[in-house]
Amino acid sequence: MTSVYEAMAAIEQRRCDEDVLRRLILDVAERDRLKVLCRTFVQRLRATYENPSARLNQIWSEICETDDRVALHGFLFFCLRKHKWAIEEVLNDAGAPPEKISRFVLEILPDLSSKLLRGTFTSLRSYVEDARWQYLMI
Image (tube, rainbow, N blue to C red; front, top):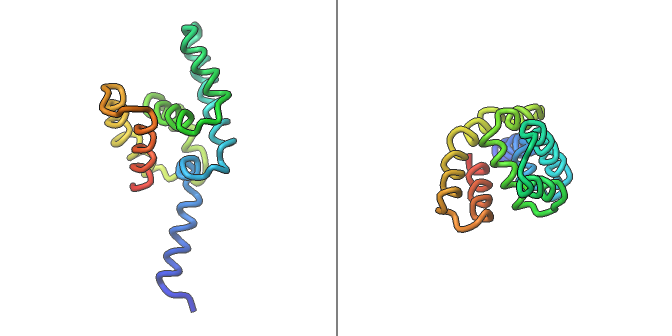
């Protein structure tokens, strides 16, 4: 017979495994999926901003080519913060918990992004690490 704790642990593990954003944040094996999502976001941005500066174009190209998870997560978080279509793209996954993602995007990311842009965070890495941690703690 399974204890209540074991049953709850199984339920919690299934819930965590179904959370697409959690998997993108924690699971290194999901790197290819993260890169595909970021490339999709770059394509949307290129379609929206038809005449970007050379620097912005270079940044988008680097996002499409990099394996740096900090850069990819930073780009993902900024897109989630600024574009509704990015939220919809993440929520299209059947396992995405809409309440958790909505709370993260509407309540947590605005403050974190503002702190990064004002210089409160000393680096993109500290911004990304704090955003990751706060999402996982919701």
